[in-house]
Image (cartoon, rainbow, N blue to C red):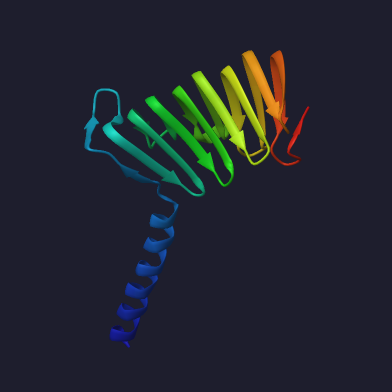
Length: 158
């Protein structure tokens, strides 16, 4: 009886640990260390973070697993399915499902390209707001604007 309880307990622990580890992001970089003063992981060189269906790359980043925040710079990319952003820097706040991308911003999807100075993307609502020198190229035609909003659910400009 005790052996059976011990085996069931061990099996339960293994199953639960797999569930917990499945939710953890994959984080890779050439150099990684924990900064206890700021409470963040510092990543340098070929940074790759995979969280669910989202992938983030950069030259360097800081990651707070406690607050689900990421600050990245240098060759930043954020991808989810056919949604692809590039920029100079990114701030991701996971609790709000938000990514803010600045500098040299380019968004691409199957039939649309948007270039802007800044963008905020909410992956829960699938809405993005582009600001500053916005240029939208769709079906071969380019339109310029100060701001633009885009729905990834409907693949439409709002």
